[in-house]
Every structure is written in structure tokens, then in C-alpha cells.
Image: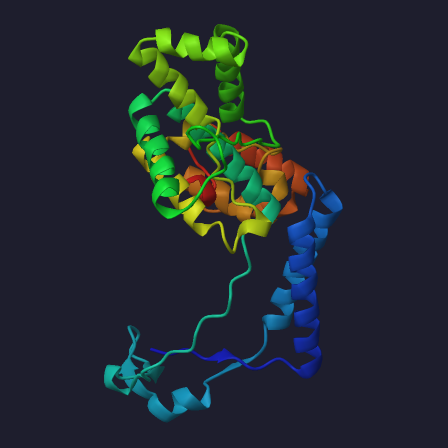
Length: 309
């Protein structure tokens, strides 16, 4: 069954919608944390676009060409006409492609969330010597069979991933690093002698920590085009570790709710609590709504989509 579709916008309305959409995207991508003015402007843009799109509705010529109607008797005995009925055999072979959806999260927020996930993967990996060994062998084999490395006796190197934001995973990794730093001897030659003297379990534990410090599953805006395989491998690593992000990330007003639009905040509360949205929430200021979301979501295990398994 087809339904009437909104009539096309006037040239003036279409131009305004295009301008507002571009302003929204630019503001959304560049918005800093806690920018109340920017958040309010985004809400205003969303409301105005919704107003512009609320036009009269009518059946398109394509639907009129293939559609029909059914006259039936309603529950009270009155005639009811069901319009827009299209038989399956009359459906066009190619449906119109859906318009590109506006991103729910800004690039800066996605990077922040995936930083927390990347750190959690590393902190978990440090305690899983079996998976760490597999991950290191995978990385080395990928280089041995598919490329070249810089000159050294074994041609092996490690690049530590430096994360910009604090998180539970980043803190755990820092503590582990400092613990091992105190254990290890100082000096290149003494480290070699120390390694030769250790048992296999100690070496595997150190190997796991070294691998953990190199994990990079952060989705950065400038790497969207070429970071897909790295992100996919990071998700595979998280799956191998049975990573539970609820143990590493709790959404708060500061780290999430103040950085997204009102619609996303309201949806999060409703989804976490399993209840419909309340009209009273519409009257709250953005900061108050974010604080409410932090309280309501606490203890439910709700996570932003970016962090879900």
C-alpha cells in the first residue's frame, strides 16, 4: 500500500533547506564539547527543516499509474475507501534510493567513543596472552608476506598509540605500563639479558602488554576513506576478546549526552528505560536534559551504537 507523499518544496523553500542542511553539517562536525550555543542552533535548524518539509501530500503520478482503491465497510457500517493499493506484480523493478541520512554523531564524538573502545581493547588484550600472541603473529605475518619494513636485525618495530582523552581503558593501560616499566632493567643490553633469563609466561605477559600499547581502533575523520580495514580488524579483535564495553564506558553528560542532539538524548533515555518519551523533557534546557539522561541511563547497560558489539 502506498501513501501520499509530500509535494515538492518551492524553489525558495528548497534553497533554504539546502542552506540549513549545509550549516547543520558544518556546525555538527566542528562543534566543541559543551558548546551550548551550537547545540541550541542545531536544535533550531532541525525544527526549521521539519517545518519546511511539512507540505501538503498527494499521490505521485507513478503511484496513480499503478495504484487503485478498495471500497469496504467499516466497523460502524460506513463505507471506507482504502487508497494507494498496489498489487505486487505492478510494483516497479527499481525502487527509488533512500536519501542519505544525516549522521547521528559528529566526527569528533565518533573519534572520542572509539578512543575509549580502542583503549578498552588494549587493556583487555594485556591480560589475554593467547589472543595477544595471535595478534602479534598476525601483524608480523602481514608485513612479512605483504610488504617491507625498515632496516634492523629482525625488522620488527612497535608504534605506541597515543590517545588524547581519558577513559577507563586508557587508565588501566597506563597503570600496566608503569608497573612493567618499574620491573624492567634499564639499558638495551641489560634488557636483552633480562629477557633471556625469563620464563615463557613472563615473556608472554610482556608481549601482551606491548601488543596492547599498539592497538589503534580509533575512527578518525581524516581516515574514514582508508581506515575501514583497520577498524574492521579492531572489531574482530574485540570479538575475540569477548569485549564488554559496559565495563569500560558509562555514558555521562560530559562524555556523550551534551555532545549530541536532543533527539538522540531522548531516544537514549527511552531505549534504556524501555518507556516512551515524556512531554516534560521538551521543556528542559539542553544541559538539564543531558544531566537527566545521565541519571536515567545509569545502571541500565545502555551504550551508544558506536560502542555496541
